[in-house]
Image: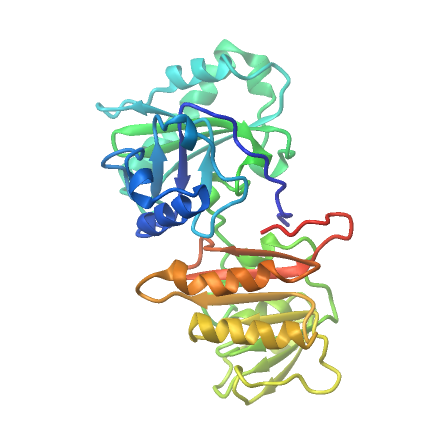
Length: 375
């Protein structure tokens, strides 16, 4: 499970880049400008012109805008601090140039991980193949030129927070490279793209969303825990907890499409009711987990969180928030403010890889020793 990351501000650097879901570049720029305390027009002036889909980058920002915010943004998928942009006009993978750049910065024996990916996950196959070739050639170049450095490379999931992450983000005709500590990034998954494993028994694609969200909690669901799933049909989120042995109260007027329940270690109770107005029956409050993936407005999601957290009906929650067609940041601001005001709550509000036009709110009790709310 991915634990909340302790972010440290990035030092002034030659550049930086932020990744987002393709199509949300403008929203990310607007959010970034608000976090940096500048007008969006001022930030637009430092961004790379003609940038690719899925990336917001500044190749040479002024000193006042050189550092990235210490906490991840809602619409940020991954960050590349201290980034450098290498033009690749002819399509040749600049493996030797990348290797030389790394050898100037990596010390033998320092644990590090290599992330090579395309900024847009659904980019043309040629770009993805190019990134794969680049990764292989960079590794070969390092083995030849610096075996001690090459031997210290570990898998992304095995790298400690103090280890170094080398990122090579491919965009058409260019490559963004970055070297930073894992603790400075917003995700340890390459490109911030955690692709949850599909399960043929899951009744819907939404199962992938909750599986990804569970990678962002510090304590995973445990057998016999009480789970209230509001708007549960067809049952993808309930299924994720049933297979972990939880007791699930699925609330929906519609039918569930769960199969093979007798083979799952959990227990299911289906209550036909409106998820927005539902009150937990005796014996179900406080629930260990509150789940919601209902097709409702952000304002209704805020009302739901206020009711359940205000009454102490839930210890942890995963709530998916559907975004309006216009001004998503305006719609999300009250939810963000409410979560930030809750004492003893560790929370995140992020657009995850499997989210589409939506974001996911995740909350759990803050560690007693932390003393700070993080997202």
